[in-house]
Amino acid sequence: MKETKEDSFKNAIALTGGIATGKSTVCNLLKLHGFLIIDADKIAHKLLDENSEKIEQLFGKQYVENGKVLRKELGKIIFSNEENKLKLEALLHPLIFQEIEKEAKLFEEQNKPYIVDIPLFFEKMHYPISKSIVIYTPKDLQIKRLQNRDNISKEEAILKISNQMDIEEKKNLGTYIIDNSKDLKHLQKNIEEFLEQILSI
Image (cartoon, rainbow, N blue to C red):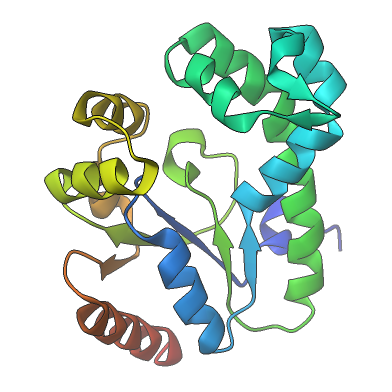
């Protein structure tokens, strides 16, 4: 029987949320519970450097130094310009999908749930993954956390957040919601509730 794209992700659960909602923290806590994680951002960073020559051709030499892409500098022209964003996505997204699919095939051999951390899961819809977890933080708190994390102004934080689907919309689309609007103890309780839901399937 021919394997379909869905077969590559049969046990996968996509983990998503907005910028600065705490996806990395949740992934680290899920690792402690034995979950295998595929990190789309890590894969994207690796692929950026592997394709630094193409980045130079597309955007200019000033965004590459010693074969490494200057991500912060590149980010400035990506977040503020739709055409640049689309150019970068056209280059990277097919490559990211291939890498994620390759890792997923290895994880599928274990026949148990695993996490694919994809920040733009709902925005791009490239992945045939039927279940998703949304890490939820209200927008006002998301803005504050992003300002503190990246040491940027409120206006810059709002611009970055506006490049993604609204967090309330993502919350409505998620199979599971993990609330990260309070402290670590509250987050851990939410993760335990999620694990109970998963184990009861």
